[in-house]
Length: 300
Image: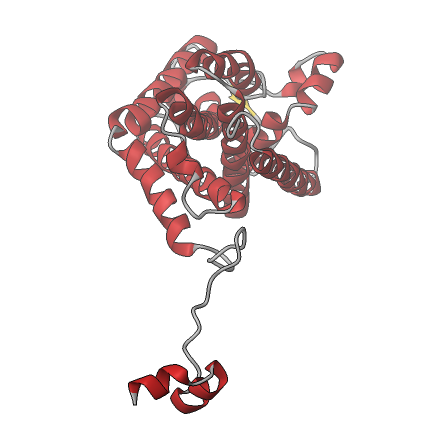
């Protein structure tokens, strides 16, 4: 019987035993995961969040103390005192209340940049960049995980700074327009997170990232109306300030607290600035995605 079974033609054997189970092989180069890899994206996000939370004294609380020192120094130096006793008012509020929102969102933006600019750069320097490039994550998911973690750090820094400033005498953080606080805060953090990611792709050592921080991010932050209204500047410098996207983030965020802004004379000007920042961040995200997809300085 065994000899007869072996002598059967393949078609006859298949007719008797039934079709053999076929193994499904994925064609080479075709993704096994379709749609969004939620598990991988969440894992990357949690990894990045845990990385900065392990050193939260440096990444969360130190920026809060530094920003509070800015408030104390500038309030005393420019107002002649601190608290409600200070005579100087800007936009109809005490000077300390005026600069507090700008300092909060400035701290948020700077820390979002610091967090995302460290991700790829540390991997390239330590030789562990493969841990980010090899997992089954698309370029969009990789960008979303890193930017999302940077925005999370920015929010935590903003909450810490806000809590510290709320205890400072003479500072009022009452919210006039919650949508503006949320929108401009997220837009500012996202913008700097994307810029930080681009920096980490371009940079080859920590000095390169530090140069961008010292010569680009810090000047644009400090010269964006954090400590003054641009109406006090000469027309040429007003035009330069209005070309600075940091100005719209800080002034729009301040509008959310005070209900006043030096962006324009009407609330519609603030809404237009909000939409403009959304478009700017969309284009910046597209540029970052294309840079990631090209593999420039990452896969060469």
